[in-house]
Length: 157
Picture 1 (cartoon, rainbow, N blue to C red):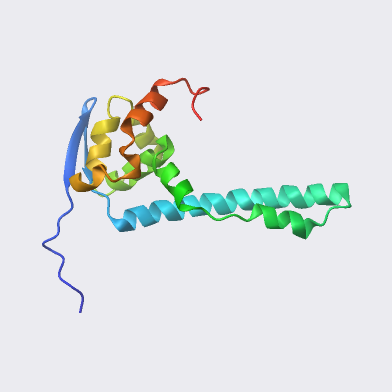
Picture 2: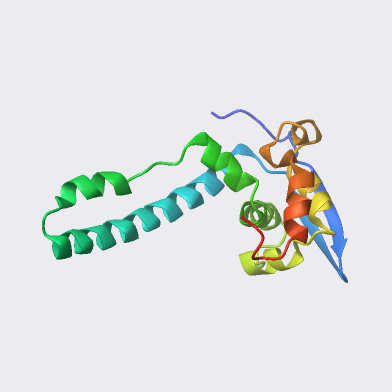
């Protein structure tokens, strides 16, 4: 028999953006794990694409051992890379999507990216994490994020 967790209720924050209200649910570890799984899936797809290109290139060159090249393509995600993804616009957008899907199951990731703006960023970020975790979160670098949001797309890293 499992533990009764009915007394634990995740924080919900309703934010009015434009004319619509959005209810964000505080993220839990399962949400963070789902985000990491999403990133791992993206990494595997990128590795597979690189693998195919390198094998073709090795065939064309002829003197290169394809197995040596393949060793270079398979890479795992480090904790630093994971944290930098949490700090990216796409990462915050994906986490906001995971938060919103509880109250708004019909919302798409594209919809969420549309409401993530420099004016809503801080408020949405506050809704994603428990108050005591915001200062410890990799995404606490709000000033850096705000400056990135204000730059033109060509100036962003």
